[in-house]
Length: 218
Image 1 (spheres, rainbow, N blue to C red):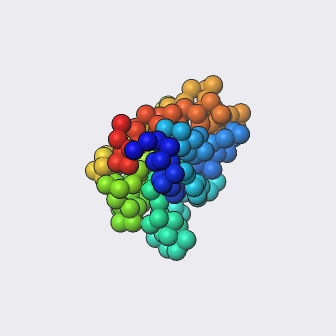
Image 2 (image 1 turned 60 degrees about the vertical axis):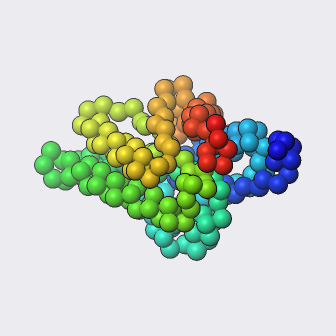
């Protein structure tokens, strides 16, 4: 089949889930429209993008939305492409509590231990919900985990590492391709929290590197 003919008959719905990184805060174009452009140019498919990224969203809020919002569930049920990032706001809130001395528990680290358990549990549940609505056998499902892995040192680092390891394991168990993206300072916007255009381009390029199976083999 020629690419031109394929483009005429192949129309995909792309649903993006996540927080402000999915929404593209901090740059002219986030990773979602950039990844969509890769999809269209490299597969010839006509793509309808439904970006459900919500600034400030936590993993608990996203899980609730997927479980209880009929419009979100309908969008996922109809999607041929799904991308996901979540969890950075959960970790950021716990980090702020620790830095302000309100984390609680021994060494002021109770909230850090709690956020690891919560994000891990929510990630498993989110992947289960997505998998109940779409199959990796007929859907391009991809994740960049937290969106990007922030550079941090000291007491917070081991907790961050535990979360990223669990996300990688959870995605692998569900046969969902995952990439971990680390951005240097030149990939970050002035607020220090969101990527700039270069950073979002790097995230989209890493997603692109995973290929488009099962709909378009490498």
